[in-house]
Length: 419
Picture 1 (cartoon, helix red, strand yellow):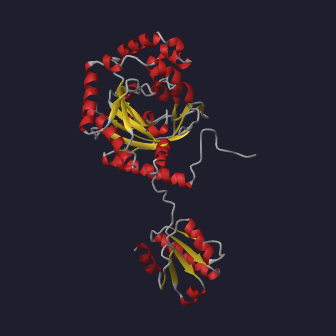
Picture 2: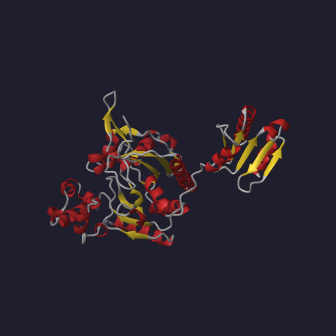
Picture 3: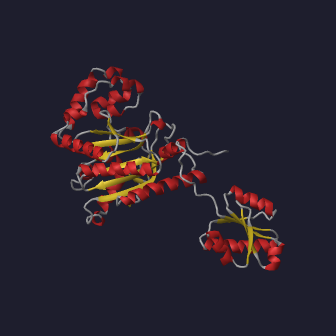
């Protein structure tokens, strides 16, 4: 029987795995400039955490979570997003963060959602994200978004743009909800089944519908900005002013709500036109009530996540993928038993000196060994034949210039390669 990876998943082969690592490393380095520290959480949590945090009426909870009973009859869910787990870890280890006026936390890893697979969207996908916990300042919103743009710019993504909106707070959200229901009531019969179900349960979720037919009926929908309370309006204006001051391009998208219930005030996405309809690379926003909802004190917070799978697609289309870091520096070739053993010893000493290399195992021919080295990206070949064994020499060949030199010691070879 032939086995394949489950639908919606894929193997990251060595080249792609290396590109993923390089991309993540670049983003984490940007996060470090802004004083974010990495936190690693389990890939599964109690189901109730996500039901409470993400929202019982969201698509994620209703349709997409991978949930199962463990052997203790506990309901367990593979994490569909990162924020809930970070908040749980923050509350569980609160003493570790109390000295920080704002806890700046970063995370990276696989997430799981039972979605319809499509370009750039998988059932096991990879995210890197941040959470800034402890401040309600609009400058936190701006700094975090600026950091997201900086991380993408560092990778060479320069044409991505921010879409931003405010979804209000507990004070103005009821007004927004009623205005939305009044508008949608007249077009409800033309909308998809999901939108009709959301109309009573959570009308804001209607704006998150990606059905093209529904989108056409949303034209003329009242802007949420007109219903914001003074606090939310002042917060949003300050965010937009500071984006202008920092020369960060953006578009106010009055239909942007994101797909999670915990957001308050600012929500945003960083989008790329290279991805078609599903064009968000990065998304997030403020969530000032979530920590209290999960049992902590009232604590404001702001965060975002970047989809690594989709980001790598954009980098590939822009022809700016980071180096895959698979190339070796040197291949050691020995022909004959004694030469093979000696070259194997040399390879271990090169690696101990920090030189990345490979050993030619075939014992076929020097020419075949060099060919193998070139396929692996080697810049040099160490060659041991009869002459080298008889005279206790090591031949180092530059595979680019074809120049070759004999050395008497491995120390000389290491020095030559590093120079």
